[in-house]
Amino acid sequence: MPTAFKLIADKAIANMARAIPATHFSTNDLPASDQFDAWRDIISAIFDVGRLGGPNSDSFEARVDAYQISNLVVTDSNQGEQAYSLTPKRIRATGMDLIQIGLYRSGGYRGDANGRSIEGQAGDLQILDLARPMKTVEPASDMVCIFMPRETLQDRIGDLDGLHGASLRDDMGGLLADYLRLLAKRLPRLSGDNGDAAANATLEIISACLRPTAATIREAQAPLQNVVLQRAKQIIEGNLRSPHLNSEFLCGALGISRRSLYRLFEPLNGVHQYVLRRRLSQIRRALKTNAHQGIAVLAEQHGFTCKETFWRAFKRQYGVTPGEVRSASLSRQKDERPSPEPGLGVWLQQLQHG
Image (cartoon, rainbow, N blue to C red; front, top):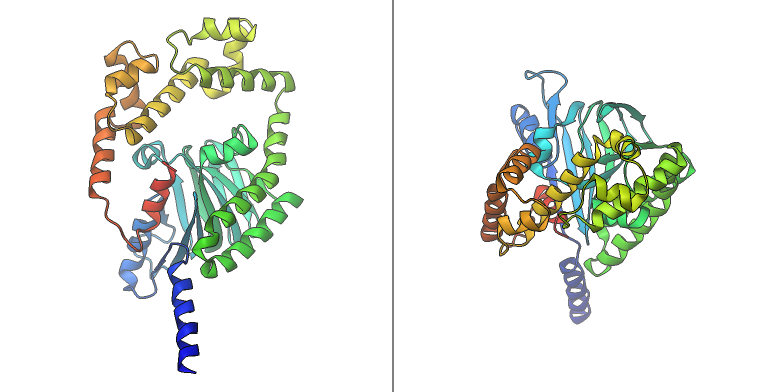
């Protein structure tokens, strides 16, 4: 009998050792005066938050359990009423190029996403592009959220323009909400051996449920204009390193006039600004992942023939210099230490390079 018990215990320990990475936070054991500040430190990995009751409010209850499965981070949380915001300054500081899909099991939100009015309630699914501004006022809420790299979702459903701030309330949204509720229940007991399979299944369901919404948003635009815009974006992505990528080149490749090209990109702040943003984004990613390639070489490879022009554009877009991005990345790599519970902020940053 002792031997049998030992085998059972060994098996249980082995299963625990293979559990998916998880981290947990709660304000319950903190002094009331420290609770909101502790919560703000945790959530600052993504958002700025403010108290709705003012700085002299009483205790603030919040809890978040976070799980990492492959290239996804899933959070199960509840928190008191507060105001969320993503400002251009915060976006530059975090560098988050992630998509968040959140299910409000209770509570809701009211605010705007990049200037568009948004509102949701219990049972709604909200989509946020964490590289775009937003602000909401929210009552006490209970949520399940999934964070993923933009490319992970974009590769599956196509262009994500128009999804920022979208709320899903149709049959597909209900299906995805049911799945997220079940996922939140299962993750605490999920074996690490099944993490990749769970992540792939989750992405398949998300893609299947969001694809009709993305298509509807695209169809709401003039159909022909949308087709040309998507073609233009493909051409731009394929020629970001070409010094010949300009309005004349695009007009020739698309067979349209310069006036039509400008009208096409007007909602995206113009074709020049769109190309500039895409080039700077690729350079910033390279600065974080490739420590051996010179900054000037990267700039030249992406069509910048003038060092000063590149430096000013990069600083204006991200609020820091290319050298500061490279130095910060090298510093993080040098200082990284293995940790059994690295924390939500670290996981979200790691998604950038997944």
